[in-house]
Image 1 (tube, rainbow, N blue to C red):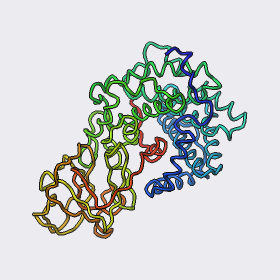
Image 2 (cartoon, one colour):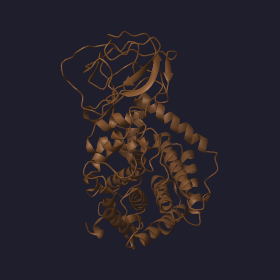
Image 3 (cartoon, helix red, strand yellow):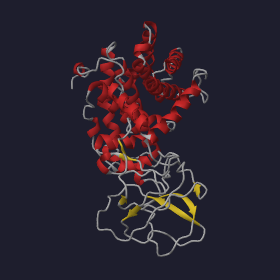
Length: 453
């Protein structure tokens, strides 16, 4: 597409980046109707309230090179406070976010020497301008636009003009920098259309280079924790393009990107700890992008993988693969679950260990190990195709009492016994909850790690 046609379908009203009235109505509805979403939101609101009296961020480069921690703090605060503002309709949260944005506008620069810092800050400030536009006075709008252009977009154009740089890289720097600048450009595209179109043209042109190492099967050359960082801004940019322009210009259909959601799944052990080769961090896998990919590409298995990290004290959550929706089933003492098993014992490659519990068991019980003390607990997660063959042996799964279960950090609530990764049937119909919006997903888990050097 020609550069002068990129903004042809720009949505005129604000907010238009990642959220809009329809998405916000869905978020509010789910908070009111779904106990687990209400629980997540309760934690977010408490965190937002704790920021109201906190000082705004200030310019600091503690290692002499990176402003990145500050950029991320500003971004996370603006996004969190913005979400709570839109749910609560309480301007105190918006005012605090605006104060945070104004403080960052007073910085001498956004440290373009380490451009990840600039890209994340440009996204943060673009979000502030877009999400709080109706509440900003004329001077605040001018300050934000000027800061985004002078400290974000123009330094980006200087890089695009060079024969080499992050825009030509095939790693997370490409995705984060193009994505962050692109989102900032979308925010102010109506008032600065020329530079916004130039930034978007470059971002759309250069982002595909980062997908070359995903093709053809989704595997990457960087560790899976860096897939988290790069894919996060890749998905954010694609979603921002969709909500602001109604198209992602085919970027979501690039060879290997859709399949890359499997990368963390296959490089995580039974307890979801990463296989930490290269510069990959050692931590438990599962990211909000898996929810987004499940919805965008209709890949239900990624929902089950992502759902492992989204648990509440109401009980164990099960994730269904049906229609790419996320199903949360809270087990109770009156719920009887049956499984179609293929073997008498759980296969560690098909199940996920989430804890231990003390109970007596019989060697003849399908899927259980005979012990007199602690027994490993496994839970089903749909990383493999479910089986619909005729039922074989069945066994009841009961909910362990809080005093009978031992938490291992994977689950905040009482621990259930054994549910294999084969077909699960319930005596009652599970309640289905649609996949959460990208905004709410990202608020719940924002564990980015520093970019590569």
